[in-house]
Length: 189
Image 1 (cartoon, rainbow, N blue to C red):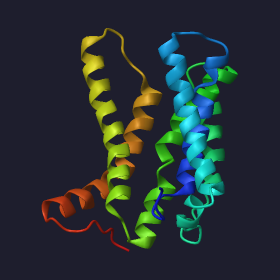
Image 2 (cartoon, rainbow, N blue to C red; image 1 turned 30 degrees about the vertical axis):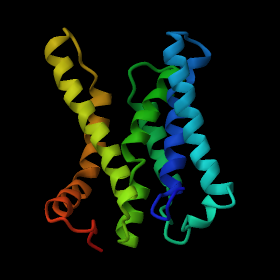
Image 3 (cartoon, rainbow, N blue to C red; image 1 turned 45 degrees about the vertical axis):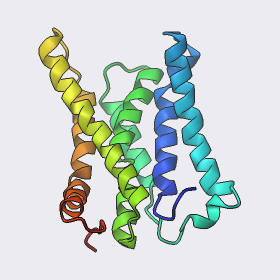
Image 4 (cartoon, one colour; image 1 turned 60 degrees about the vertical axis):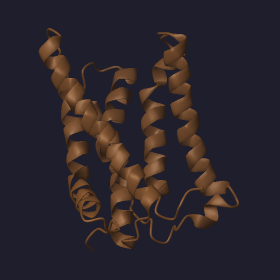
């Protein structure tokens, strides 16, 4: 069951990220594995949103009064940026670039919710930490590939990923402090 510390706004943004990133499943077949994984990401993302909004038990644990970040204000700037700065000006490429920009900031409603409530249960803290760790490990992958693959340069992906990781920096600091001191994770107000 989801906890009140999970932001529906962040989950909606992630669902939009995957919906715009995986448009290629309708046009390009790479492999069964690739297609199935994209469908799993899409299905799980939209299922989480549905559960928080509609499931009679799960929706009771969601605190919409605290999750007030106006996440729709993140969408338009990311879309404008994707139209202006992309690898190739095609619908699919602009949507893929939009998904990168939006993913970079999708965690903001979650971080604001955690800071507002200051009540971070263990499961929610681990969830946010693992989301940030996932992106940080991607950066290590990019560094490795840059030095081992000729002409591996993806500026848009790199900059969006670095911005995303930097948004987690404050959370990481308090996460590691609580872990080191064996205390409950709390963010400053």
